[in-house]
Length: 83
Image (cartoon, rainbow, N blue to C red):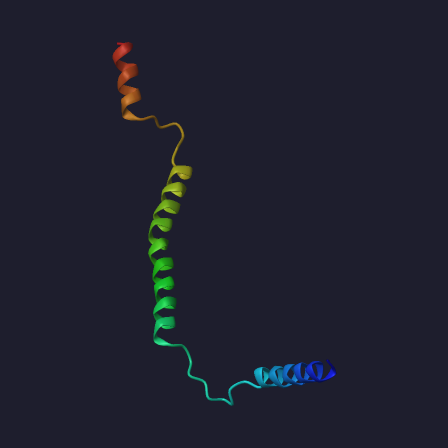
């Protein structure tokens, strides 16, 4: 039992040091598929900004417009009933 525990402990210590050491500065960088995935995510975000800008502009226009103005249908209905 002591031999098995010592073996597992020594492998655990050596494995931890090997994982922490890195790959010696020989890095490959992002792969082609990772670059495509990141680019696709960026495109999704960019295409969602156009409707967001239009919605924001519509809300600002609605807030800044005069509340006294009434639709043409409402004015036409009132004037037709009260000649």
